[in-house]
Image (cartoon, rainbow, N blue to C red; front, side, top):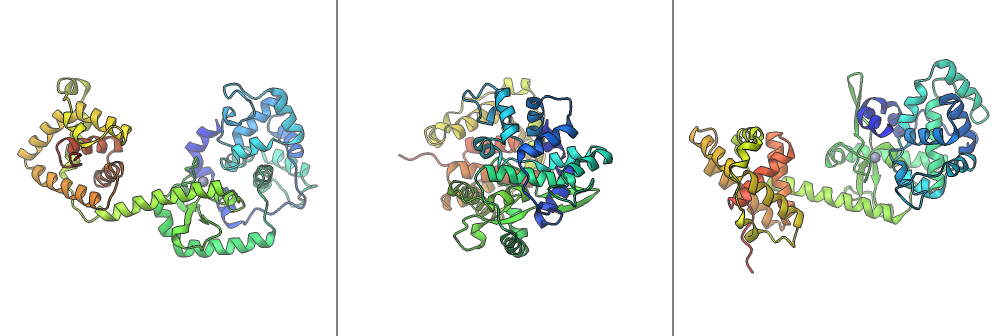
Length: 410
Ligand SMILES: [Zn+2]
């Protein structure tokens, strides 16, 4: 349930949480560290008193993470659920390190905040007073966010990450704000306004009550190197918070790969941005979208030429994608193009020349076939705002009709 809610509603319900994490404003460090075994029964008492321990444990997990039970890694056989007995142990002694590691980058504290804040003020006041021993300033207003912050801290610590001191936090916050000020806009565009952390994908611009707000932080990728733009990445505040205390070189390698992909994409974009493409292509895509099964069944084509341009061994997925689209659509698209050309709605010859020019430019920049294919798809998408799948069909058409990809020369 939480994954669904998260996908549906994060734009709205995450905003307070994320601005709080981003600015470190509402989240005070508790006076004493709270343990999972302390929090669990208190949460259970106010969120689901009549449920049994394993049931509520699963409920709680659904509130704090998008990781499903099959991925917890607590059972040897991934198809079976974790034993109730194990969950009782987790509730009593804290979650295992393995489980903490599995969920640490997929936490959804904003969902937990929302669930707690759905409770009445009376309930939230009782919850706050049960936790006064750990933080005397808790009240109905702030208890949800503080509990979420504690849970995040518990999971991070259990996963082996070391919490920063207040001074370290302060210093890092300042450095981050400076980088965000300087490079934020560029980096936000680079990632297309979604968190690029593998498995996350949270929107980095959130809206509430008609107002839009940025909810992202600028992270240094390789912490041993200088914070220059090639070593920076925009992340959601939650991924940022966890990554900033994570020293695992595997994770930073993963993020460096992400950055590389983003840079390649940005380079290709600027590479062909100035090349024109007939707006009539939008018309053609509109007609392609209307083709039904019967239209297509009568007009299939055996795409012999594809084999002369693409080696299945180089990229089997690209080869099959293009072959399939050509087989299914080529004859009909040619008809559409010729008809639009006759009516003066597209200059077909011009489009062919433009496609060739775009292909040459990308080829000259030594892009791989799949990069070339994706870049042209992206360009058509930007011009037409049509779904990628139709843009792929169009590019496949131009592969077969010889504007994209040269014949392989042995
Ligand atoms: Zn994220």
